[in-house]
Length: 219
Image 1 (tube, helix red, strand yellow):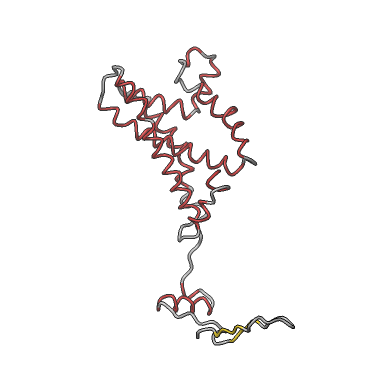
Image 2 (cartoon, one colour):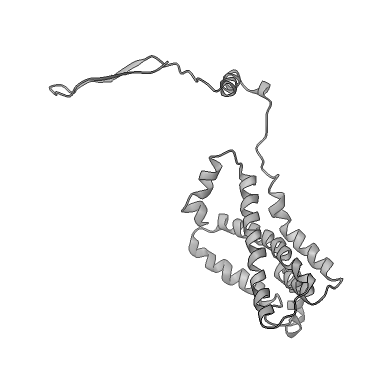
């Protein structure tokens, strides 16, 4: 939201040969990569306090990346909808906090009513937590379901690469002016203008003593 509205970062990027889907996917990929890196921090702290390392822990960054893709899409979607930056507090309180509480991070889901346990099955954080625990303590067959849910959750971010891509046309389909400009671009110029060689000047105000300036446009 800040990059788009205040810093105008995306406007600068779109001024280059980058289209909106490519920018969207790049931003989602960067967020997902950071999720995978930051997700390793609690694991390293736990190992310092005695958690035995295992080969399955190598999958934790990839679990974070997969989950990060989905939340990157969700975050960018909300950033396009909220009317102001203060509105993100409602997203935090009404969506992210409940998702965190019923993900199994702080409390076992068996402590909740049955309807909460059922609701947790569509919570991507719950499946992320399950996968991390399987990676640390041993894989279970239920990990396949967890991966499938996260893939579905991350699919919109990947699908955005092809959605809304600008159409391409052949050079022969361009109008005459477009084909002429394309030829000049391939030659490296020059790019003539109909007013090349014209003379313009600034006349002094009546009664003034300012000199007259003339300039001739290069042809």
